[in-house]
Length: 248
Image (cartoon, rainbow, N blue to C red; front, top):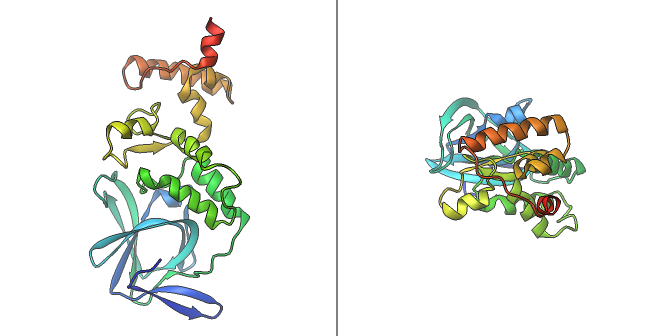
């Protein structure tokens, strides 16, 4: 992170990034604290470094999918949208004055727990922050694995693309992959919602849902989806090749 208002300072064995301006506002979605993506850590905030911050009236974005800490002088609340097209949300705003620490230690220590955090919490559990433009999601995912020191886990990038294409859904029609929506609405880069990986089967088809885990839930989901389909709130169900073979 190279900004003119941040300077490196040696503090014992640590190299810190210290704010060298008049006022900085860091916007952390309040949901971060509910989902375990951020926490109060003594006099610091320990958070995943995917957020927006403002200095001298200009917004900047950080897309580092690892957890680090910053200090602050005061805090407030904000509700609304902070960027054009971005959905309204509730934010905890942390205010940094001159001399406050923006990053407690730039020497990131690789830990297998961070790999587990990124894959299970952010990706598989659908908790990737919705402040990221859809076009940046793949890059952030791959960068997270690279930063954690595992590269691509010897898996083709196409595998991640396929997974993300199913996890990201249209905000208004959850059974529609967002890739279809954005093809027709290229400017709607924040019009998505994320789902857990375990919800993919029930959104794909009734058969794949029933063949998945928790059959009781899947039967209930099939009934609800059928009602929503009749009301026009979700699209038509797609018939998989396996179902065609079984039918005929």
